[in-house]
Image (cartoon, rainbow, N blue to C red; front, top):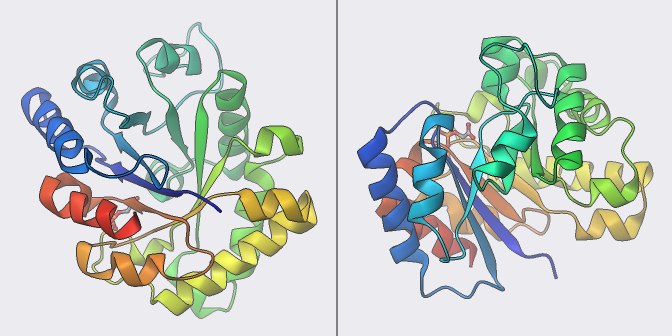
Length: 253
Ligand code: PGA
């Protein structure tokens, strides 16, 4: 049985006070939920990581970072290394979020390097994959997702890939209020799992967690999670409201 995994990507939101308040509210709201059923993570901006790690300490709620650089240290002004993230208590790290790919301009190859060094540094990467609206309309969804998956996992052994969570996030559904239908999500999730089975092996593909992301809300979480290959949710906007995020976690548990 794959365990559900719900992560809240706060993006460039919150401040020093509200980040801690939100983290504590997530801890309080998810306290009664069986940890063996659902993994919960919050993903604050870099600067609030230490405070949020402290706010969730010994609660079972994990903390992730929104990005990472592929070098361990040195003259890379503005970047953050896997070792630094580990040092402040991060467990997870997003790699290749669509805003990094399409707003900041990260290449597929750069994303792949980040996944590799994140694993090497003892972090658990969440590799985000997903097509633009024009790519979907042109019938290229599978082609784009396959490219993101292959370049994102390039050079990794099956043993290492087991540390990765895949997040399918159709770009047209992110922050737009236009969620993929459960059927659309399931179709792509099944495709991803089939591809993982071809790239590695069927057992590994069966075990891997594939999250859906893109306008997830308390109201649609249950239906998305009911799909066979949807194992978790990567939540943006709705993760900034503690009560709504907790309802999403409950739906996934
Ligand atoms: P959203 O963002 O839930 O606000 O659509 C999801 C994401 O970008 O991870």
